[in-house]
Image 1 (cartoon, rainbow, N blue to C red):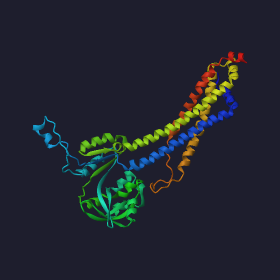
Image 2: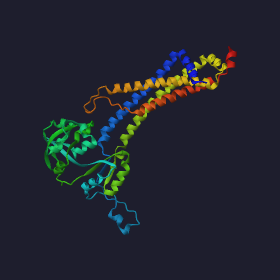
Image 3: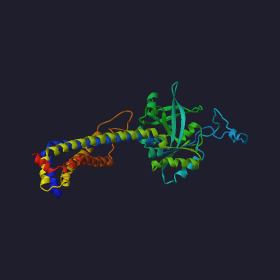
Image 4: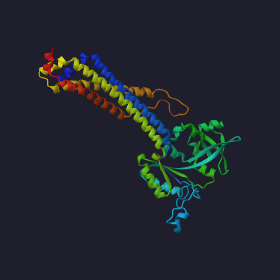
Amino acid sequence: MKFALIFDIARSLMLARFRQTLIAAIGVTFSITMFIALLGFMNGLNSLLDGLILNRTPHIRLYNEIKPNEKQPLLLSEEFRNSYPFIHSIKPSGGRIEIHNALAIMAELKKDNRILGVSPKIVSQVFFNSGSVDITGVINGVDIDQETRLYAFNDYVIDGKSSDLKLVPNSIILGKAAAQTMMLNIGDLVQVTTPTGERMQLKIVAFFQSGLQELDKTQSYASISTTQKLMGKSNNYISEIQIKLHDMNKAPALAKQFAEIFNVQATDIQTANSQFETGSSVRSIISYAVGITLLIVAGFGIYNILNMMIYEKLDTIAILKATGFSGKDVNRIFITIALTIGIFGAVFGLLLGYLSSYGIDQIPFETEALPTIKTYPVAYNISFYVIGGVFALVTTYLAGFFPARKAGRVDPVVIIRGK
C-alpha cells in the first residue's frame, strides 16, 4: 500500500478529531519545553557551583605533609621482628613543609604535554592586626599570572587590579568580607603578624569575593616573594605545587605517578571534591527524571486518545479492511498518527524549550555573594535537544504501537455483522 494514501487517511482521521489531536500535540510540546528548560537551568546551576569550587581547585596538588613515621625504631629491631608491639600516641618529629628542590620539579613538570600549567603556592597562617584585635587569616603566596591564566582569578576580583600584586612591593589582595570586618579600603595598609611573631605592613591593591563567605573572611593573596619575605624564608621556598591538566579525568593516575617520582604527597581533584561532585550528579539525575516523567505522561495521553479513536472509528477500520487494506496497513495508519503528533510536538517543544531557556538566561540575578553572576545560569547543550527529540519520538511511537496493533486485528465481518 502506498505511503501517500496511508498518510492521507491518517490526516483525515486526525482532522476528524482535531481537538483531541491538538491536545495530545500540546502535551508533547509542553513536556519537551519543560525538559529542555529544566535541564538547561539545572546544568547551568551545576556549572556555576562547579566554577565556585572546581575552577579554583588544581587538578593535582603536590605538598609535604608532616606526620609520624610509619616505620618506628622498635619495628626495625631484630629482637622484636617476630612480635607484635603496640605503640600508642606517636608524635611527628622533624620534617619539612616546603617541597625539596621545588623549582627543578616545576621545570620538569612543564615539559609534560599532559599538563596545561604549573603554579607555585605558599600558604601561611597569619593574624590581621586591627587595632587591639587580632583576626585569624591565611595568606596564599601565588604567581598571579598563573593564577589568572589557570584558575580565572580575575573573575573573582571585584575592585582593583590583580596585576598590581606583582607591581607593588609588599602588597596584598584581601577578601571583601575581611576588608569589611576591618573597615579597610584599597590603598590602605594592613598589619600582618605570623605565628612566629614576624610583622609586616602590606598595602591593599584589590578585593576579591569567591562567593563563599567563610573563605572571604580569612583568605588573602600576596606574591610569592612577599610571602617568602613575610615568613623569613629563602627565595626557593615553595610549600605547594599546583598542576592543571588538559584532561581532568587523568588526575588520579597522574597524582600517584608524581607522588612516587618526586617523593611528595599528591591529592587529585576527584578525591578532594568527591562529595561536591556527588551533589552535582544527583541534581542532574533529578532533572532528567522529572523531564522524562513529563514525556511519559504525555505518551499516556496519546495512548488514550488513539484508543478512543479506534473505538469510535471501528466502522471506518472495518470498511478499510473490507476494501482491501491489510492489518499491517491499518497498523501503519495509526502509527503514522502517533508519530505525526510526536514530530509536531517535538519540533515546537524544542523551539519553545530554547526560547524558555533564553528567557531564563535574561532574568537578572544579582547578589553580593556572587558578584560575577548577573543573570540566572543556563546551559545550552545540544545533547539536551537530541535526547528530548529522540525520546519524544520513542514515547509517541510506543504510545501508538499498542492501539495500532489492536486496530490491525479488527475483524471487519464481526463489525459489519454487528451493524
